Length: 287
Image 1 (cartoon, rainbow, N blue to C red):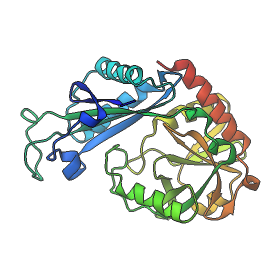
Image 2 (tube, helix red, strand yellow):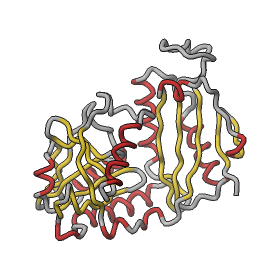
Image 3 (cartoon, one colour):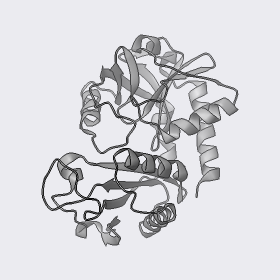
């Protein structure tokens, strides 16, 4: 079946979708994106993604082209048109296509933002085998730009990080800056010591994860202690458990860090419990 996508107000077959070669996302990585998971045909934590989208656009001084209700209608239409039960909806907003290449931003009055959305079908998204066996990660230097809190389409170094991990026979990489872990290539990073969940505090250094916010809220409600501070790779290797969170992985255990095995190589009980709570609560609140 040909996938239906959304481009600047139109629903089109994917092979008919076109964006200008002068679009600033293509030329300058001048755009932001969001990814919302779909479980049982419903959107997970959609309000959180819209809030972060609005913040990212504001930080880059890009006009939000649609209202919350319009964003929701498009997401639901794409889920229906593509018969998505479990999967993802990707949205991207760029500064637009001014008709030529220039470092200076175009006049927003004459250059409207480009809006693109598409779905990805992921049957059994919440039943990933990795959740039962855990992930292996390596550490790499974090040399990204300083505004990681803005969810931009500048993803070259995270892509390189994932390839470094793959070449090392691992699943992902954790990024390290000034001796401490910032986050994963496409996720937030955590360690567990006893009943204490440790993760880096919010700042410009990391993405303000929507799944992160929900998981930490659920952890506190379950009487788990949450500590927001930096941690080192050595501290992570000595932890009882480790895990990552993201919109598509939810809560995913990490069982090996730079060759050091955690918890006998098995996902830990706190990670498993947080994943269970997150999926249960998010399914209840899905729209």
